[in-house]
Length: 281
Ligand code: FAD
Ligand code: FES
Ligand code: MG
Image 1 (cartoon, protein in one colour):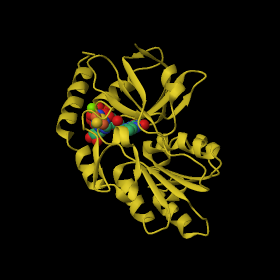
Image 2 (cartoon, protein in one colour):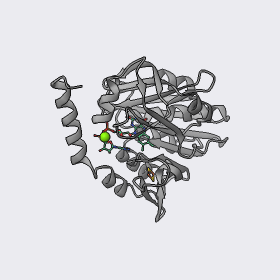
Image 3 (cartoon, helix red, strand yellow):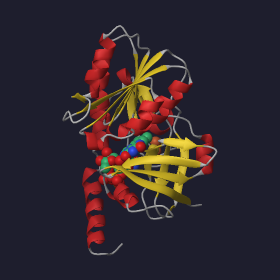
Image 4 (spheres, rainbow, N blue to C red):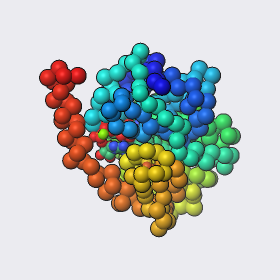
C-alpha cells in the first residue's frame, strides 16, 4: 500500500508540514499517538507524531524538522509523491479527560504533539493554558492554531524576538506560583527541556506528564529499541507511552540512548548529501 502526500508546506526554516492521505489512520487516531513511516522500500522507519487528523477527509498531518538522512529526504518530497509505509496510529493515546486547568508546554517541534492535545483537552471541558516556545520568532510554529485551541496562549523565545525573553518553563513557573489552581502540566520538547521543566514543576502539587521521543524501530514492543526506565521499571515508549509521569522518568538514560547512533547517523546523512550533490538521487 502507498500513502499519497496531498499537501506540503515549510512552516518554519527546515520545518515542514505534510498532509497525508491515510483514511484508516485518520479514522482511529487520538491525541498523543504517532505513526511510523518509511519513504521507500529501502528506507529506515521513523516515528512522527500525529499533529492533526481529519477522519472525514481521511487525512493525517505530520510536522517534522530536518535532522538527518530520512527527514532531509522526506523534505524533498511534495504533493503527489507517495510514501511506502505510514503505519499507525501507534502508542497509547494521551489520558485526556476533564480535570479542570491544564498547562500545555511545547518547545520547538514539540509544539506539534501539543496541538492535538490542546484541542482534545479543550473539547473535554478543561481550561487550557498553552505555553509555546522556540529559539526565535522565525522558528515558532502553530501560533495561530494553538491560540484557537487554548483558553490562554503564552509565547517565549530564547532571543526575545517574540513574547517572553527566556524559557517556556519561566512562564510555567509564574503560573504555578500564581493563584491559578493547576491540575496537570504536560511538557513536550527536546529531552533537556522536559527534564528541566519536570524539575521546575516537581515541588508543586501538580501532576506532570512528558511525551518521550526514544529511538524507535518497529513501534510494536518487539525490538526493545525504545526502552526507558520509569519508576525503576523498564518500559517501552512505543506501547507503554509515549506519555509518562515526568517525576519517574530517567531522563539521563533517555538522552544517552538517543545519542547512541550519532556516528552512524552522521555517516548516513553525509553519504545522502554527497549523493545529492553529485546528482545521484
Ligand atoms: P538521524 O540523523 O538519523 O537522527 C537524528 C536524531 O534523531 C538522532 O540522534 C536520534 O536522537 C533521533 N532519531 C534517529 N532515529 C530515530 C528513530 N528511529 N526514532 C526516534 N528518534 C530517532 N520529530 C519531528 O520532527 N516531529 C515529530 O512530530 C516527531 N514525533 C516523534 C514522536 C515519537 C514518538 C518519537 C519517538 C520521535 C519523534 N520525532 C519527531 C523524532 C524523529 O523521529 C527523529 O527526528 C527522526 O527519526 C530523525 O531521523 P533522521 O534520519 O532524519 O535523523
Ligand atoms: Fe521496538 Fe518500541 S520501537 S519496542
Ligand atoms: Mg536516521
